[in-house]
Length: 387
Image (cartoon, rainbow, N blue to C red; front, side, top):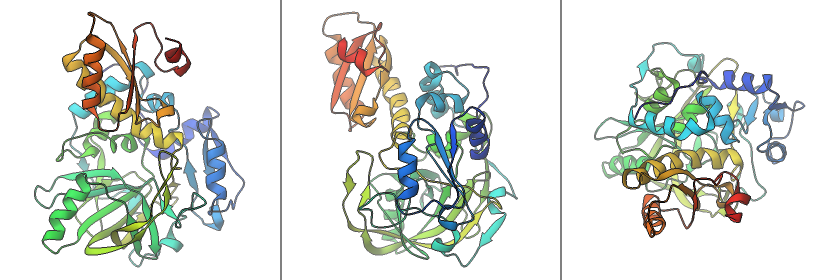
C-alpha cells in the first residue's frame, strides 16, 4: 500500500499546531489565573469540540495549560496534512512503515533541568472532576523500555500526583505493564519518562495498536515524514521527543503499591480507587517557555485519540479478508470504543454477517456493529440510523 498524497504539510510541534489553530479561529485564550481545581477543566469541557483552549498563568503558575487540541477528527487529518478520507490509510501506512528516530545532543525540552523536582511547584497540574482523588497528569506519554530487548514503548497513562516526587498510575496489562513485570521479578525499578506537550501526531501515534517491540515514536516519525528528533534523558537512557514541552523522569518502584483513584475516565464514569503502581520522580526537564497539555477524561480529544488508531487497525484487518469493506467508524456515541459502523460494497448474501464476525474479532472493546451500503455516510449517525 502506498502512502496517500496531499499538498498539506504535517505539524511537528505543539506550538506550531496551536499557532495554526489560533490563526484559524479555533483557539480560545482565557483570562489569566483560572483555577487549577475544576474551573480550568469546566471551561475546556464547555468548548469541547468547538475550540481548543489556552490558559495563561493557571492558578498563578508561570506555565500555561492547553487542552482540546485534537478534539475533532477533521483537525487530526489537518495535523497529518491529509484530507479526512485519507486519514486512516495514512495512519496505517505509517504504522507499517515506521522511521527510526534521530538522536540529538541538545534539545529544547532540556533547556531547564530540575534535579530536585517538586511536581506541585514545577508544573501546573489540574484537578479535573468533582470526585477525582486530586491533580492528575492526564496527557502524558509514558515512555519505557523492555529490559529484555531494549525496545521502547509509548502509552498514555493516567497519573495521580500523590506527593512532590510521587505519582500513582493505572497500568493495564499491556506493554508498559509487561516491561514492569520483567523488572519487578528481578527486584529492579523500571525507568520511565512522561512526555507532556507533544505534537498532535506523536500523541496520536502513542495510541497505535502496535506489536510489543514497536516503538511508537517511529510511527510518529513516519506520520511527520521525517525521523523524529529524540534526546536521551538526564537520569536514564530513555529517548524522548526533543521538541516536546516537558518531561518527567522517574522509576516505577518494584513491590510497591499505593492508593490511586478515583478518576473520571473515557466512558464518562469514574474509575475506582485501588492500590496501584507507584513512580518516584527523579527529574523534570522542560522548555524555557513550556506549555502544559491536559486532556479531559471522556472529552472529544480523549475519544478521538483512542478511536482513530483503532479505526485504522480495524479497517486494515477487515480488508485483508473482505475487500468490499470501504470504511469504518467508531462513533463518539459509543465513546469511540464500543460501537462500530462499517460501510461495504456488498457482493453476496451472508457477507455482512461474516464481516461482523471478523469485526468482533478485530478488537475486544467492540459490542455493537451496524453495516451499511456504500452510499451511506457513516460519519453521520442520523444517516446510519435512517439506513
